[in-house]
Image 1 (tube, rainbow, N blue to C red):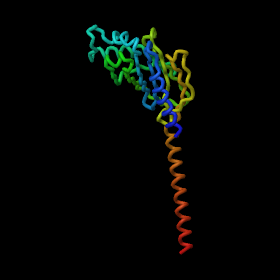
Image 2: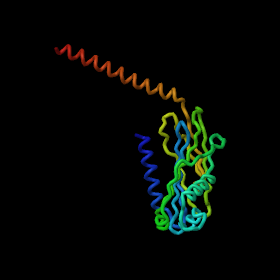
Image 3: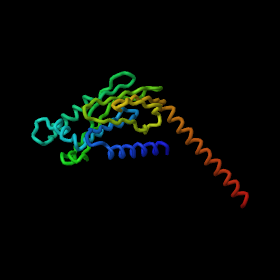
Image 4: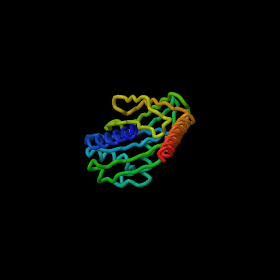
Length: 213
């Protein structure tokens, strides 16, 4: 229940922020998700109406007024080059997993959202306290930034601290990993206790039923 409430809170905050972003900024919202098999970064880039043309020019490399599939991939790779990720001071390479581009019309209205998803296939299996560092250096001249970490779905991963820079271009994320075996053992212990409780309850009900008979 607590995890669900935190996820809903993050989602609501994201929607409120997006709807209130200023017209003369290129809003870039990064959400970081941790999982045992790696890291997932979802980046939402929303140009305000007053800077939409500047962003479009960055995408339209040949200046023909259209964004081709090749230009979409080239721009996504340009964004990727401006991102940095490290775990325990070790650089971790990111890979583009998905890219969705808005139309020029929606961008000019300040409603277009470019959605990029990046993944890092690095196992978060080392137990104990860990530290992740993320930074977004894409077009800082006219951009505004937000960065946040999602509540991990895996119970063996727990976020213990978040520290952002003033502009929210970077995030230092502290987290703790507990052994998966220990987590599984706790679940089995809880299930065993529940099963034992049901057996005892059933036994008492049978004794009570026999006594009444």
